[in-house]
Image (cartoon, rainbow, N blue to C red; front, top):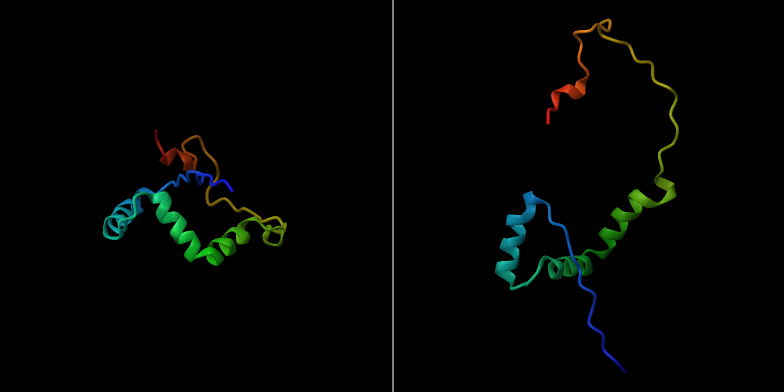
Length: 89
């Protein structure tokens, strides 16, 4: 019987959660966010599966809706800018 090393698990951590995760790791002695994720996955497996299935099962696909009538609040002019112009790069 041979023992193989488990695959490495990399986990992306949202920036707004990083401080919380660092605190949990420092208080528990967990060495990596991958290890923390494995523990969370073990503990909340049913929740992860449920959340995954909510988005990826065919039963949750969006059904076609009737067309929606769009009424302009003002006639289009050269001075009207699209809403996306609020974002500048």
